[in-house]
Length: 154
Image (tube, rainbow, N blue to C red):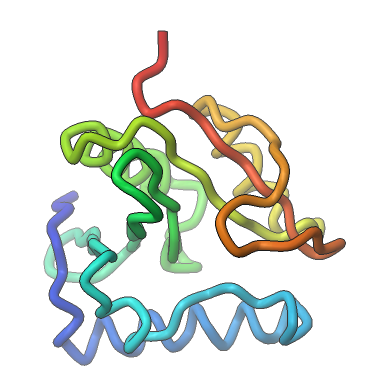
């Protein structure tokens, strides 16, 4: 699997992200949807990675700088036909290492509270994320779960 920074200019990435946003809209009330669309991911404070195998896009993830020491994990997605095959773990491991290299001390995320998101929450727990209060501009929301970890684990 190859993981590389993606400039978000390719049509395959655009389709992949549109499918992600549409799926999140189908699962989460609009006021609780925090998935970023293509234009939002192009902001300078965001670094976006694509994961591919044999030239096929199989996953993605992003980091959004909140401040010089704190970043938010965004847009983690694995191609539905490839879920539970280790792609998300390898991608998350890569992004955590990149966050450390960028000098971040804390990495936080928001994910869904519904049963559909349980595998994602387990993945984050496996990588040292712990439940926390809302961060940045988030507010308490029954449809959201917030998690955080230090970038460098003891």
